[in-house]
Image (cartoon, rainbow, N blue to C red):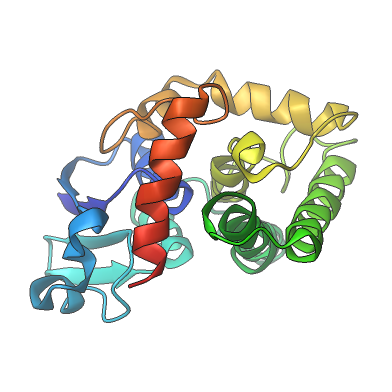
Length: 226
């Protein structure tokens, strides 16, 4: 049994979608970031960096933090979504790290300057939105001749999709990226993906209703100050 400590964010969904896809039993523990729960001593014993998600494998009480590390740990536990053959494994991990080092940080910064930062800085907004779009184009190119990013469906697809699906919130367009849109649609149609992005609870489509967006932005801005 896995204990999952999470909140409704792209990084949190990476863990919950992976758990759902792998059909690994887990118990969800919602971390209230508005109350700074991720900085409490008990949680810092699980993740010294004070961020979600984190897991504890009850079989040995093994704590794992950083979403990419969690995905690798779970895939190896289940023997699925991460090949053991060296070249195939390297492809999956390369695209996983592409998300960890590129898509996530760039979209995260786009969110900060486009949505949360009190002072609107056009140059900063453009910098991160343009880089996000460039990374989307890289994904689109990789998907032109491949159904999935690394050959077969893998944790690399889950990791990138959990962020790409929030592109509207970041103000990053996927217009004209037909392969990326096809791939994202395939993932969105998977029952396990649908379940995973409703963990720990379902949140509204923030790109649709302005009142939802404003409230979410205010709360997120408070977290950034901690």
